[in-house]
Length: 165
Image 1 (cartoon, one colour):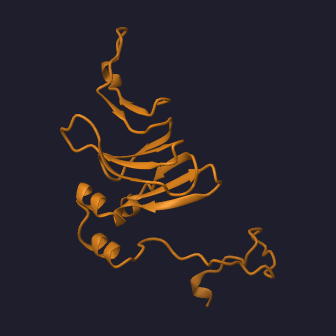
Image 2: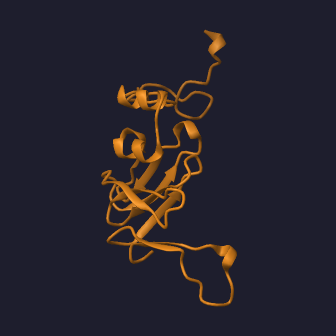
Image 3: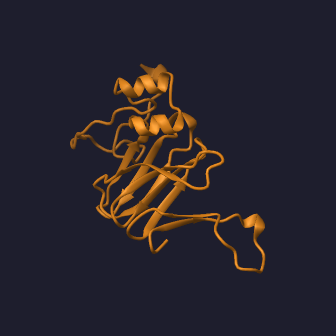
């Protein structure tokens, strides 16, 4: 991975002889620093590199290797971490962290190329086209600095049950 290549091996065929990769993908121009395989969407892979790019790959059943779906510079610097959300409902979202110290959530389902490659349709596609974010609540941009620490120690008000209103 130091040369930007990603290789796939079948460890079930491991023997004392030299093992050859099933496929080799020249994914980046610099070292691959992170990759993840989606558990929610078979054949979906994301790679991150010190070249500051995050790339989404698709391996359709029966294909000999991945094909590039899309590539983005998410403005987080050199990529240190890429991780898919584990649930199918939000499984097209990738958390990406980098050298700037920030983490961004990339919803790849907003890309027509990703929707086409992974057959995204129905309500999820409609929500994306309408610009809605499914499964996430908005976080306020500012925190009231006058707010005192509650007993929860989290710097905010104590948690309250919705029935207490």
